[in-house]
Length: 78
Image (cartoon, rainbow, N blue to C red; front, side):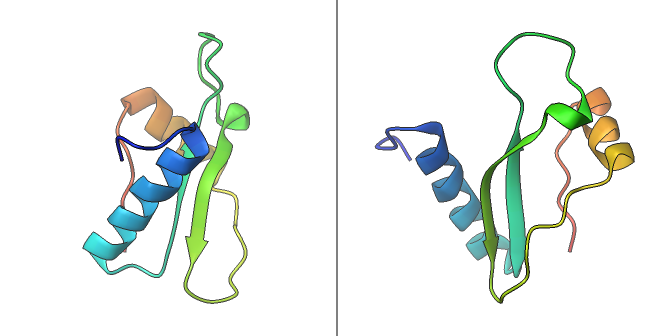
């Protein structure tokens, strides 16, 4: 991961590692813009997304996103 030359490359490597370690079929890493403002769910941007099939990305609900941002804890679900 130390050789990643961009945030996108790093996010993809991290996601690949997480998916392999957890044996999951789908996952995404969402990031906030680095502007220092109070984080909001509508600011989240997809940094990386993987699916073992043809499943498209489905936006996470605003409620779940706001909960994660407020609590400052990631969500891992299976």
